[in-house]
Length: 291
Ligand SMILES: Nc1ncnc2c1ncn2[C@@H]1O[C@H](COP(=O)(O)OP(=O)(O)OP(=O)(O)O)[C@@H](O)[C@H]1O
Image (cartoon, helix red, strand yellow):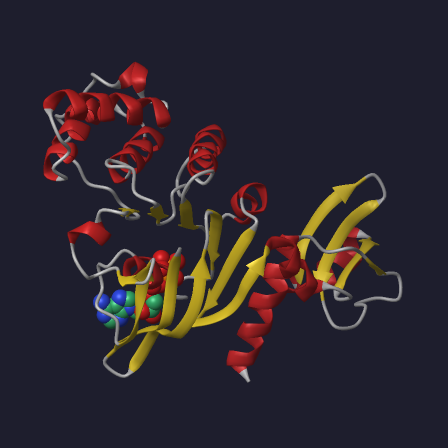
């Protein structure tokens, strides 16, 4: 169990993350928030890579910075993962296993084999990493964080820049890991969270705005989500930033927006998804900031 106890980080006079308290249990936890929300800061604090300004991150009651034994229970994959391009995935994993003091040569080889399988890289295991696609490099990044079977896996934007097929493959790797570990991953792709998480954390401008079940997020757009059919002419007159989506249909343009009141007399209230709820929450924060 990973816990944030009044955990916060300040740079000079500005909080990158205002003090928060929360607990993460086994399973997939999606971390959402606009740019600069504090997601990487929270993940780096949890990984023990940043010194908090207040409070602490604890794993089973011990500070994540209290020594190697605790540190080895946490696998962290940064947004950009660097490795020597001339090494193969297998060589790299053996190297990391040596750095992490994994037992004998035979045990290290077995560990590398296990992880290559876990991230579906067996068929490319003996090719140099410079020949890998972006998705394969990301999967190798995850594999190296898994050396030694950490209980906590923290991944910063794992699906950024991946094609849809690779995104799904990588998401499935994380879902599999979450069967037995705590997995925390940040993303700007809402469907990745919708498809894989039960629990979601939303940060905005360094503050915690939501920590709970996926379904609960939809509530933020409840009674505020409207759809209506507009003509081409009407659609052009609407300020485009007010629309969530607009798609052509046989009868005109189907518009969707979040607003306290129906934007036209023809608009009908619709049941929001988690994505609508997130957008409603974030737009309410932006309006709050502008006031
Ligand atoms: N080393 C630093 N010194 C000063 N300010 C920093 C430092 N690191 C982060 N910040 C600030 O803290 C805030 C949170 O940054 P953070 O990288 O955690 O956001 P994020 O949610 O991960 O953003 P993104 O989605 O763009 O990666 C930002 O305003 C950022 O400029």
